Length: 254
Image 1: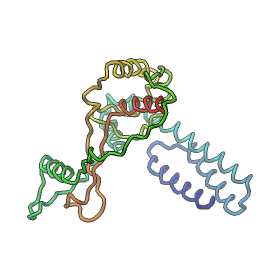
Image 2 (image 1 turned 120 degrees about the horizontal axis):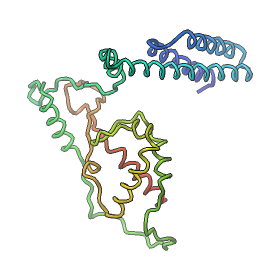
Image 3 (image 1 turned 90 degrees about the horizontal axis):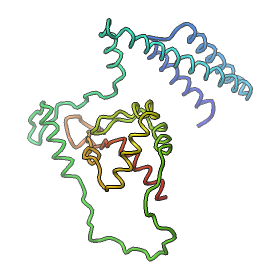
Image 4 (image 1 turned 180 degrees about the vertical axis):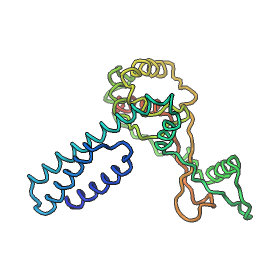
């Protein structure tokens, strides 16, 4: 992809973002967005590196100002939540990414299924039928390689846990424990100590919390008609805390 095309896409996405965030954008933000747009058009004409660097500065300034405006707006909404709960829940609902997009399904004989429970049972039955269980008896022979180093224990520190929590993708969905990744990321300093002790205890005793062994399976529509369960694929959402511990183990093994 060419640089100019990448910048065009970036500008379009930024414009869409600004339109979505119109509710809290102020004059200061709009002025910076205007400067960014002018700088981009100038760079598009000249293709000069200096013009690109100027565009990049204006772009970063616009992003920074927009984020500040968003933080100020959210603080104001939270401050007035008690007196104006409708505005608070309206904002929260607008941020939720999970939407019920499962249409009424049809059975093989053409009967409509409208109940959420019956839909879940249909998906469970279909996903179970297409699940492939590997043949554990036909495993390849183990290579006779020399062991250079024994992994007697998984060593990690509280700082290692903190670094992983800080890098957590806040946009991911939670698992069965309903612990939001954004909470882990924003409260990384406070949560690193209890999670460090929990991880150590889990590895020492060789046990896992029950919810870490579970997964929330969600059907994702692929293509075709939405009334056919065969047009959906399953994704499994597991505990983000457990995946954090898995990263610690993986890093030590590697």
